[in-house]
Length: 180
Image 1 (spheres, one colour):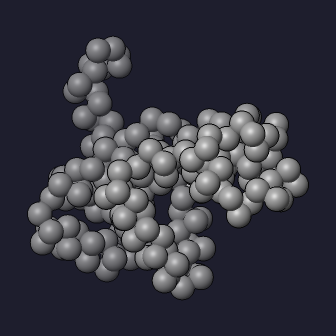
Image 2: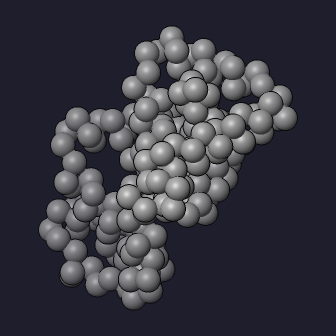
């Protein structure tokens, strides 16, 4: 049962090793989208941010506000990272850059689909991904193979069975009326 669940989650999240971190970053970006309307004054950036973004200093006021906000958020996040986190981010970026353009496009589309889901479904997917990552490597490999070798019809049946199990599990936890 758990292997089927992990297989379905794998189908959504396969090839996204940094998915959890990227998801958190994407949600932060979405939450501040409304604030991204107003330009950011260069002088309002911290000294560390100004050092990191120095190459943009002369053109800062001509950048679109959304770009200013993205750069400001990214620089602040970078400044708060430990050296190990920065190294991991560099490695993820390098892996991303090495992907063929069509693979990057497919991953962006998958990311957009993920973000179009309701928050509770995104949370459930994250939890399932966490469970999948906690499985032994050999079991993860077998699940990946099983999912990748499944036909579209088989995958759809797997998804439907998983949804039924999830509903039954929720009902067991919350009772028939959905109350806890």
